[in-house]
Image (cartoon, rainbow, N blue to C red):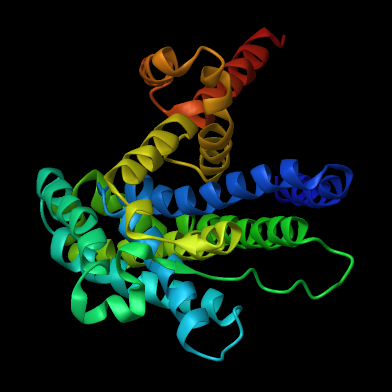
Length: 316
């Protein structure tokens, strides 16, 4: 499977030179969604937590890059190094507060974070740094090779980071730490009896998810060239949760499917007109969750497993 995934990423990078920039731009956004959802796979799928703070963590990465570009002489690429550090610190802090409580309390705590984050960005003592209600503009980093357009370079960066994020997530899920997170997810008292420090493990998972989300937020800020308080709201958090559920929250491949769904599914419903597109979008989401509770990735894996079982039974 590693060979298959490697060939897939290399093929995607090569195909980007065959399409116009506006098509590459859209696939770049799909890759950015996938990186963000990869963090939610670790947080919600592997460790069994619930979060609504992903929009705030996404915004921390975007604002970190924008503030670094606006107020320091450092290279814009420094924002990409700063984003995971800020995201991990913020995610770990949220996990320490909410991780030891029930899912309802986690929902309330993270909801408070996502509601307070845009207000914090407008706070007068720091609005000279954040830009207040007007936000901040930032320039896209200069491609290292003059033959590459900004859109194509953004896609190659996002694709490379997505491949690295998927590799790290796969290793984490199948490592000793991943098994500890799954044990804490399935039964926290049994995990504690086995010597697992459940609050610390959940906080670490929240920090890793925060790093993923912040990196995605940094890439998104570069792509659109602007960050503002209104961009990181509660609706963005819910949108990410929908993508996670549709793609599948228990595998890294589900994050990629969810990213593609978030980027391209509105095209399917937009043709029905403004009055019906949102309604159909909601109906499709409900139908998909009922038909495939484990998401698209889980549904495909289950189908392949049943086919393999039938083939074994038919053998003489």
